[in-house]
Length: 342
Image (cartoon, rainbow, N blue to C red):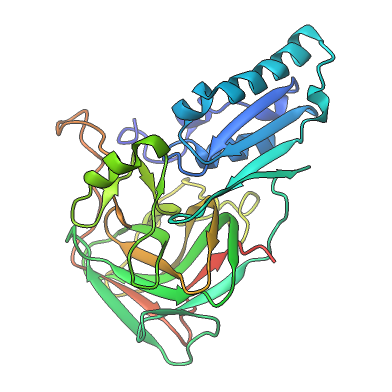
């Protein structure tokens, strides 16, 4: 259907639930590490019109979470209160309970808040510097560029920032890029944000804690399966779909309208906002935050598969060709906007 309807139209509009019409009690569960549901579950919680809604954002995988006995008991309390009217103390449950991940360390899993998000962090800007490969607090004065092969599955570029103090990310991220292609009239970009230890080793979060040893045994070329591990938020964009919906977009969370295609010209840089999924993640002093950009699935995890190759089951092909070039510094303010909690 994506091939048949590449732009937003009545077909897609017909599939969207009007959550503003839902006013009954709601028990909403989300996980940062879920590769399919995380962003839309949080958006759904925000859009639900119910005055009685509760969010629980956990640090495991949904099958593990819903089968955990204390979570079954928790859900039963909600049902008994909201369906049977039992006075069981459920109404004192915090409206928001959430975890913050610490890949390579100990997650903080018992936070509570009255609203989601608990705070709305002002975007913290780190600028891309193609000369040093760093993320910097000040925009580089000199213009520079870095390139990678758009079709090489091993090619990517990285930008790094080593934390000097305890840092917490909470919410969506945005990578604002000036980029061009050497060939063709479009380009597909993929981005990942993750952290490494002081020795440069990627730090991962395991969605099935009891299977950590097994998952580690599946490592190939330094990467783990994305269905079993989490390193940080991901994002992707097709440059011709870079137009934003101004009513729904924020600085940290661009909302693509998908109403038209704005093709690019070879050698001409365009600015686009590449939104990454929301995350809750701790970064400790000495750890390094990495932004990786490529023409394919990026980061220290292997891409999810959609099935065997064939006309109906193959992955949608990219529109990449030649070389992608990212422009930084001077008049090209390429940057990453981070939801750093004060």
